[in-house]
Amino acid sequence: MKETDSHGLLHLTNNLISLERGTDELLLVNSFFMRPLYVARGKDRVKLVLREANGKTQEEVEGLFPRDSGLVGMLLHHRILSDTPAEKERYDDAQIAAAAAAPPAPKNRMSVFLLVTESCNLRCVYCLNGAETYLKTSSGSRMSPDVAIASITACLDQLAPGGTLQVTFFGGEPLLNWPLVKEVIRRCEDELQPARGDKKIAYHLTSNLTICPPDLVEVVKKYRITVLSDIDGPPEIHDRCRPYLGGRASHAQSAETIRKIVDAGVSVALRTTVTSINQDCIAETAAHHKSLGASNCGFVPVCAVNSDRQYLPDALLPDPYRITAELIKLYRSRIWDRQTLFPFNEYVLKLRPGARQVHGCAAPAGLTPVIRASGDVYLCIYLVGQEKFRFGTTSRAWDRRLSDELKVSLHVDSVRECRACPWRYACGGGCPVMKLAMLNGVEKNPKAEEYGRRINCDFTRAVLTELLWDTAEQAKDRLNSGKGRPEALPVERPSFC
Image (cartoon, rainbow, N blue to C red; front, top):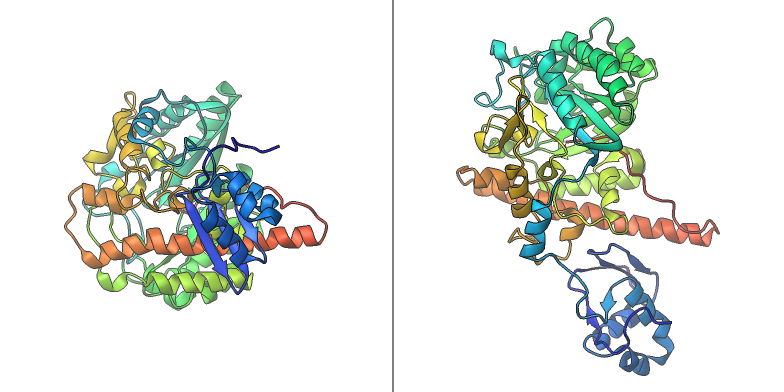
């Protein structure tokens, strides 16, 4: 039985991702539905059928290719071809606006970032925290327990039953306010969690780990706190990127704390911010992460603008094509597997059937609120201190208007540079910080803007291409070995923001 009305004219999807490899391999994806079709051989025949099918009925095509009716059915099944003229292939302005204005549904998962202090003991060369927007030295930079608990409570109120709130202790350097971290956890465990038994509270610490309170390992282990730290390369590279305020080396102390936590049986994910300083030692850095006992390894291209809306020096920006090539080489080396190497472990989630990406991150949906010591709530860690992107305080209900506005303006079918790209529903348009910086009146910097475009587009497309081919290979291997269809993709992974 045919799946669709056979009297319609067939048309090729406007969202077609078409990849070719070697002499005979073809990979086709309608990114709106994300059901990849891998052609191991017969590439030219498939391309011929697609050319001839466009604008004809299914019967006409099968008359031209009587031995290929199964192929035509498969192309329809994967939505590469459609014979339903009204089949949805994009979102129009009215649909985008209506979705943004709809009452918020309870959330299954949120991550609240608590800036427990905005001070830091390091002076990283690429710090996202601007001196004007982050209170690095002010006595007002330390959060109180009441502000933290009020923020967590507000997030719990937005969760659906069975949902999880990840409380992320952030900064600055959160271990500079370790007593607050412990107090917040105590009150969550003693007060909030018992009162919200149908919702789960999890804890996460993002720290440079140059500080090691005597009870750090005990607390981290007891409350199953996930830990993320930054190691930007072997000691000589890391110390250039992440020195102490006075300029001395920080790697040795971070490494010592990491090993203490790892030796206690706690997982530590390590992240590298990629700049021109370390772009040529990605494989070496990945091996170094492994030697430190990391559970996960991540490489994040540096953001070209900080919270003060100032661009990094041009000389610090890496070459997107070079880091793309190095990361793909690392991925193929299998030093780290797909589940433990960022960005691959996160980008593969974009390739799940039906996993349509209309935004580049969770911020427009209000899933990652950032709370500073004053109780002010911001959309993103890169936008702290910018009044335009403050959408409330812990003392009153959060204003949804900013979130609603950004759901519209950052939707891939609203962004001029994205709306005609067939990859848009696979990538979501990339990190929106550069777009928001431009909206907020940042002076033009052609090199930084081009770098941001290449990271959001070319880098993302290259990683997704690698994953599509790899997923096809894994599916082929499983079928050839008699194991059946590929296993379902994971839905959880460490966060590398």
